[in-house]
Length: 256
Image 1 (tube, one colour):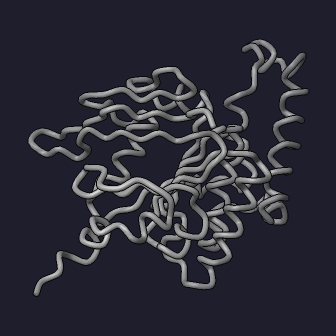
Image 2 (cartoon, rainbow, N blue to C red; image 1 turned 90 degrees about the vertical axis):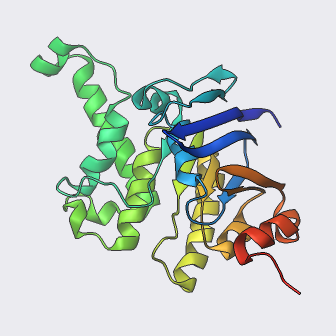
């Protein structure tokens, strides 16, 4: 499988703090890649580097063979990288439909005069935006809530809306930051199947940060483990589960 994302010797420093140190990671197209590690290991910092929120102190990030490190977040999003956040970031005062349309409309192309006069490509683009956004909401079981403010959704539905909005960008790569945060065991199991359906239906490569090991081990094809900003292990779920360095990072060093 060809590499969709390549992270080459990336380091991120905040003053005297080194949050990411010489990170190397390759994500082939078509897989689900998990990133795990203790709190403070640098997982979300790595997502912020990939999506352009941070510019790496050292190293290069490539997407589809092209360097993206240092580009604006908006540009990286339009290149085909979508993202959700650990703390849900939706526009709660806007309707459910408007939340999805904001992402979809960023890809529409019509001129200022067409927009002002509401002629030409404007009308066709608006109709397409509504239709495509409603299709996404239908797939996510949210079409019945299209006209209500997003603040009126349950926590789980808000999480699905955030993922739907990210998919409205038509990404080839979807980054999910702790999608199971705040969910119980049953909800996490349902989310595992939900994410598997998203991967297969939308044919999207996924990278997810997650603390729920049941979800990670049952969904991911490959896992990278971070500890204090360094990659300490990289491999299949079976390899990670048996890795002594991973066990030590999570449980502490054993003593006689």
